[in-house]
Length: 122
Image (cartoon, rainbow, N blue to C red):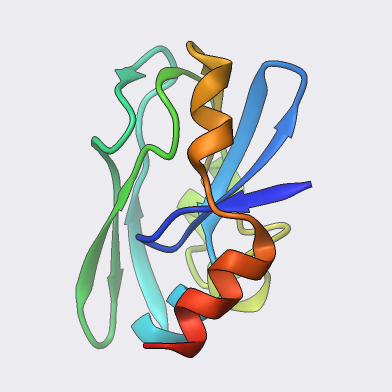
């Protein structure tokens, strides 16, 4: 099951590890992504802190930690080929994996229905 943030990140939880990426809506808004700065494995973030920078032909955008925790993996494939985010934002274009510090934070993320309502109203 996926959850979402108001800043257009998606989160898929497996055990205590969450896979994080940007939503399909976000990648469409950004346009062709040409560069990404990923966090480093071992970095610790609090919910809401800036984690990555995406640069596209239109603009640069920050992504934020949807939950608090420690980065346990980054998607090296997307680092070498940022356009993968445009082709597969919610699957192969994931950004990083983070081990949750506080599983209760999962409960404050948006459901798919709530996220779709948010996008529809923008």
